[in-house]
Length: 222
Image (cartoon, rainbow, N blue to C red; front, side, top):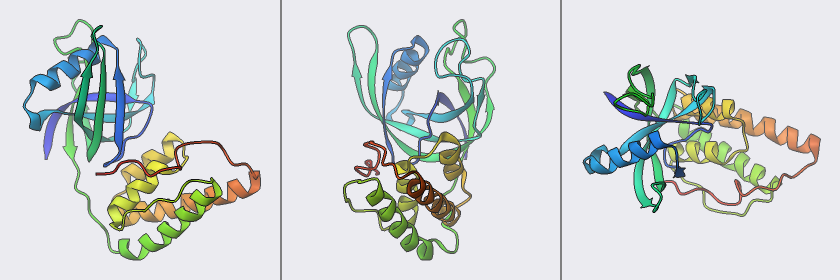
């Protein structure tokens, strides 16, 4: 399915099911939130896509974007007295970015935020997801224990598991983007296994336990 959606470039990767809070202060994104609130409830979503080159704000913002992002659905909006917004969103479905509207995204444009044509992607499982899920679950539990993260129940569904692990590993943007772009759940779980093995070696070599909240709980996946 192809459609045109507002784009919200960020210096992070959103995966389906992950809750993403946003503090909206730039004027163009204030307009975006206002436009979403005025739209039908079924249209209150936008595309979160990671920035390949550039910054989140300012004149040099988002010069290049990664090709795959995730639709974010508004779940709660708190309008502040000065025009800013505190927004709660949740990732829903992945998309491939086909093109960016050149007439959008400029302060003097009719639409000051970026808009892009996207192809909403299916979520194929692949042929080995069930077999891989157990190995990934065990490897992630070892990883979390090394980082002294609190125990919590991991999803049984292989697709949800693949995104939960992707969201909770302490990886750079490039690795998280590779997980997001995986062709299917099986490919994502295989890549997660390789990354977990690499991180396990690094942690053992460094003998350092970084203090972080990222692995102390599994984020709210829907």
